[in-house]
Length: 65
Image (tube, rainbow, N blue to C red; front, side, top):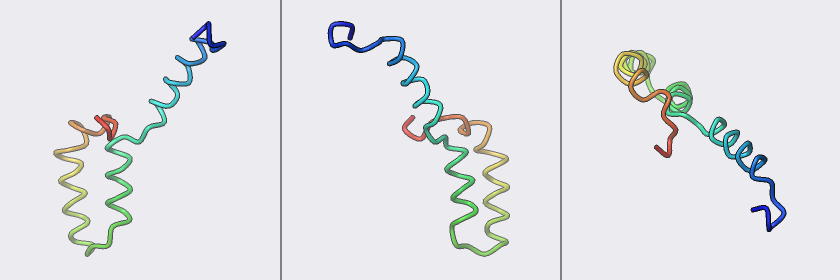
């Protein structure tokens, strides 16, 4: 990297920033639950299942994981 004129520290910082900005399962799931067309009762059931079973286990994972 140094020979190519790039800073390893800046590369590392940029990579860390991109990872933090990547969408998590929780972000995607919550947006999907609010935007997807479904009956209100269905949405309530799905939100309950999501919060009870999925959020803790998968919420922090990045979508590509």
